[in-house]
Image (cartoon, rainbow, N blue to C red; front, side, top):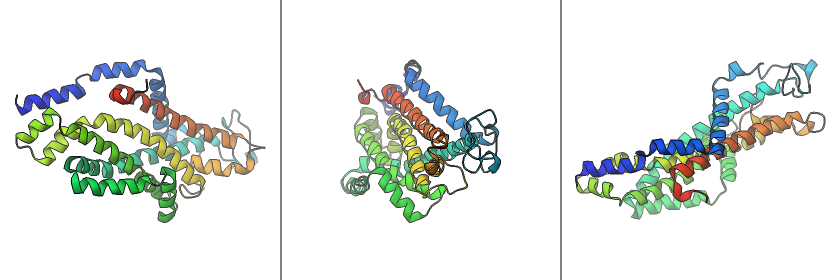
Length: 294
């Protein structure tokens, strides 16, 4: 059987049932609910200036600590700033960190995982030891430590969270590479004289996208929580810029007279992370049945 035929069969196995997988995903109500909520957050982040009713930094001392009402649907904070506007812009910061941090982790982690899984031996040993060293620290502890070293800012928080997610991406990519490098169509490509780059990027990586897609949907909510934590600790977004973590930090002194200052940004964090987790679980069940919860 020729290389072309084997390659085609491999791609059919991974992509030929795409319509069936899409139908299965649509039948998963929790995944679809998560996807819809996640889409709402992404759209709100993209069109925050149009969605937010007020400037999130606009001070209105006459309406400080105003309860939720028609003028301010989610109330105001101690400086009279509209809570809904700040939640929208805070979600924008969370989505930015979530997406960019995951992209950063994939840009670094995927090539390292491919190299470790494909070449093995010394390369695998070096990459695996580096990964194990980073995994010795819990994700949030590593992110806080890196952000403290880099300095407080949204950009540095994004970099810190992205670096903290690299080990997980490396391990997923390495495992998929080890699984795929011995399948028939990859072996045929090697026997037919295909170079390492061709094998890695035309045969292995495209067939590892299912697992990597699931990992991305898991990494985004982790990054959202990480950004909220770093901003809460003063290592992420800096006031007066809006962030869900900054809002939660500022609400600590007003839990009794103005509980809405903490409730709504807290609910936004929970909703965003839950939405992406539900979507990720649904994608895992559809794209990677071996890892599905039974």
